[in-house]
Length: 333
Image 1 (tube, one colour):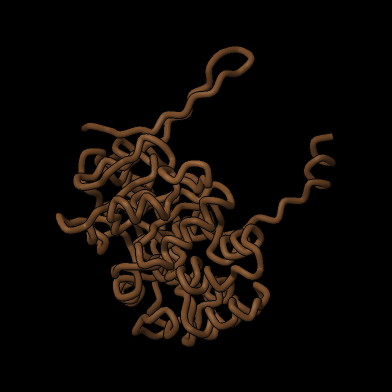
Image 2 (cartoon, rainbow, N blue to C red):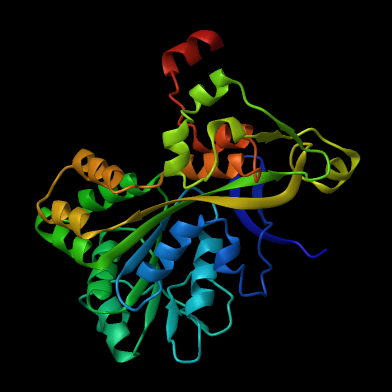
């Protein structure tokens, strides 16, 4: 089996340190997974296709290292990539046929218009830009390009869509918040969860206390668009067998294969109106929840109910830790 790794190196006091990140879900020479196989819920996938798969506007992909942002991007580009599309990647090294990879970053520079994103898009007839939000200039320029009718897919390291919105607001002047509202179409946050081994996983009936701990009731099932009663809910647990112990690089009981859980914030007219009025982040979040925003925990619980992952993976991926520094240092002492 051919494996693909991303390798990082850094000099240390006693030698060089290497970090190898294994890309399990993609072949480096392929065009990536189909968008339908990433793990998006059907109703989210349909809405994502209608809102994000047309020309113009920006789509922001967020999440920590190894959260599946690259996989999501390549799957999205696979839907858009054709002979008529001029797709340019800004020094990100994507190896998909039909993509143009620049050898230098294309950022805003008043002294040299050749590296200005807007000038480059105009002179080279770019249909879609893939950029990395690294600083204020990148964010502002990419949003201006998206507002001009060029599609933009951008990266950013943030935990959830609302934190990404807060980060962008902090780096764009308040009088330019309208630019975010006019250009941004969606913010996608992803995580990877392991799939249990189909040979040895066991199904069990959850207790009432367990369902209450995860706030699973009839209303939650309807919100997750699962046509079942609360008495029909079943989960699976990872057990471990000789097959998965030998073939998996993860814990026993799991396959060496991951599926994605997603939180997608679609910028609707109501949310854009709040942004233009310079509303705070709490108001924007409340409005999104009123419109049926599907959180990362919702996506993970839906997969657990469908038997695609375990509750242990749901907790590991979606729990936000509150680290008590005082308690930590007292225990160390």
